[in-house]
Image (tube, rainbow, N blue to C red):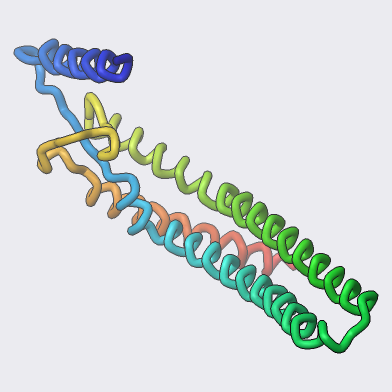
Length: 189
């Protein structure tokens, strides 16, 4: 019920904003698919590759630990009939210890990936947000909303492609400055 009231209020507000500007000036609306912008933004693509490579390394590390556990379990199963109880208990203890190590490694790796994701993606999200605000002000948009917040919109309001071009162009402009700064630092040494 509250959701319906909120949606109704939002629609009334949006219609009111548009109606208030009818006759005096036009209401300029923009819709952006921020997910598509990120999927086509070179920095976000590079960041995703870094994260996927780290995830792959973690998986390989965990697979090795998992294989060690499987080997110990097989050894225990095959030798249970031939070993005395203390030896079987020792194998079981090793299996449990390796299982705990595997779980701890998984948790540490997962946490490290989450932290790295946040560290790398936060500036990218901020950059996209700043670009949307800049475009909104420079091109005099009254409202820019994310596509995910809409049920339907006319494609003529979609500014996603424009933002993809701008964010990649801005990154290309910033990259030579960064390279020049690194070269200057190296030359100073």
